[in-house]
Length: 449
Image 1 (cartoon, rainbow, N blue to C red):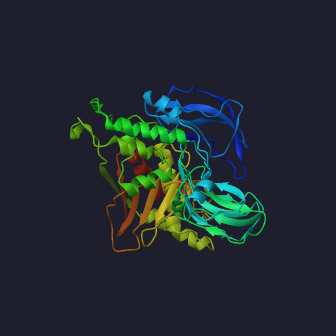
Image 2: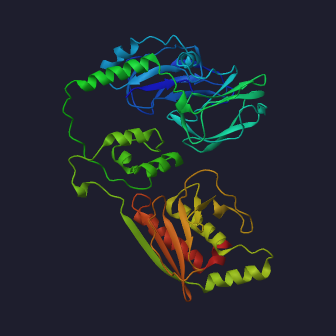
Image 3: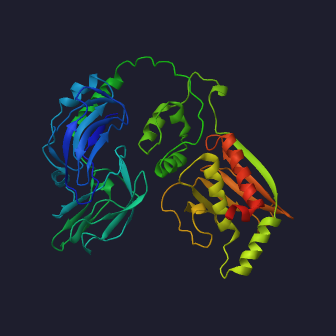
């Protein structure tokens, strides 16, 4: 499938970007993640990477050209045979508004265009989480217009212009292609503000991309060539690095990110890499033993509760607002994981009633009496379950998204259990983590001091 190379936006008020120079020529092979051109934006000179493997084609802007944000400047096609087909396409004569008018759709008011921004070169879409303003509302340039979920995090998008919200062109929970117009800000109050779904007005496809798709469709009708035997997969060691959005989508769609690592796709993974994952299909020519599965593993430890109980008694006596056991355990878990797995940033989550997870970053680097602030981004590296207030002494967790640390109470002892998959932690790191956490529970004052 062909992939458009678009002029990215790093600022809401950015209208154009200048192509400093192309690093690849039309017709040359490119690899996913390889820099293909340099672009000067409002912020800096940055490299634009290829979103897929293939051949660069249909380059429509040269070095030094100023190109509107969201415009297609090239197309990456699958084979060298598709290059000429993609280059033979002509630019569309009508723009999106004219196409909408011809189709009998609602006429849009005049105004400055707000587009779906790109924060990463491999980012294809952004998910609209929430609109903070309604059609017809008066806004200032610095007002928050909407919230968007990207590969990296949930970000706030400013209006970028003073005026009125003349049109909202995509609804909440819709994934919109990067560069698409999602709103219009008019200088004058609109007579008839517009609100509609992005599905009601699909973005017109560029001619080069359309040609390339037609060529790919024609090629698919020809006799297919026999596929080469699948290469043996390599075992995956350590934690899979991926963006929160990629993890969420993979989980929702039942996809295994470890397959990408087995195929040698460079980490960290983003939402766009899931397309590669879907294309891998079923494993061929491998025995069950050669394909590593996500094996659930469990480690358990028993620690006397006397040392930690003495600490809590002292804190309640000496401080007005003593921290909870769970607050201290979050810090201990973060410190133990940092030592065992050599990570710079640790996000520790705690399971709340109902199954929701509250996440806190670097809890071990905060003063004991400080209030922890919930992390705005990043998956939990470890999830804590506190069973000490219940009749349950031990339980096994699925550990689907992160290793789960369970703490139960059996008379005068704490029962510490760690559930994880072999793709989340190595055995050595898991053992070191449990040993480190148990040591902190056993002698808390020594570790706190």
